[in-house]
Length: 115
View 1 (spheres, rainbow, N blue to C red):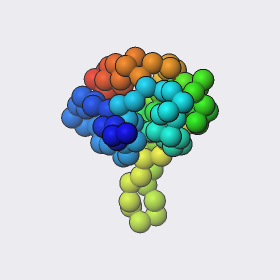
View 2: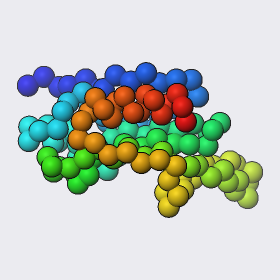
View 3: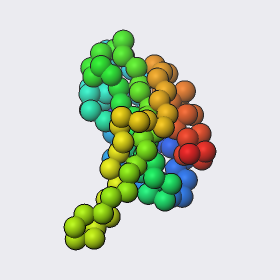
């Protein structure tokens, strides 16, 4: 079987791809190994202090869901003056769940423009 491609996404300016393991496959018993990472996709936008994270939960369970979250980022500065952006996972900006990959793609692209 040929390896699938990464899911094409229209990513607008300002967003950085921190990691991408979001493949162009629909959930099935034969594709669960593509949905076994703790995070499939993580995007960050420091200028608007938001991050977008995509997971499949429970991992390796064909009956699971994609979970798409927009995380508020908190800007911090360490004692050396280095700026970091930490995710505030306790106070999410947005959360969306779906089993449908295309629905998730559409929602990611909407969020990239509107968030």
